Length: 189
Image (cartoon, rainbow, N blue to C red):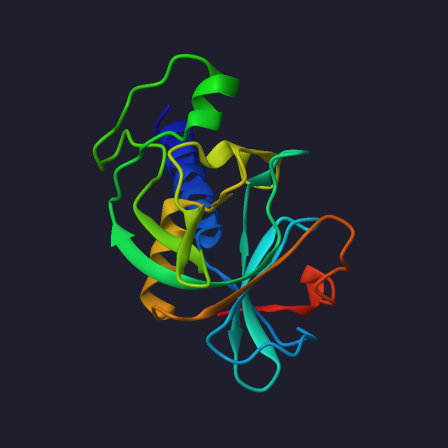
């Protein structure tokens, strides 16, 4: 019985270590884009967000992107950043998704997650954001109302790196891949 308990505890520690590794971002040395360091690139087809580093490198994060007909693409800037943002559903979200509260204060139960970066074009809020999520199981899918969702751990990391005013390029469907080699050729940061 003691051996079974010890083996189970050892397996739990081993698997726990694997789980921790999934929270580590990947620094991809094979990122082949021309955006300036400090920029953000969103590949909606690949469902990845890249933070561009010097020397043609980038940090890659998994993302949830907008569902068909709800996605946004284009070039914007990070107009503002907020920790534990509140959420005010748009009129379109209320129409499509049914009864929603007028506003949800920031916190662990808020759908905006731990951090948000608000995308602006021409000095005006686009109403699209790169933000965290309290539903990390949807990372890698196209189900949002157009915003780019990341795990809270990843959005905190990106938030800490990106500056207000940073360029954000959102590639729409079929606008081309981010031209990144397979994950097998990347190394952990």
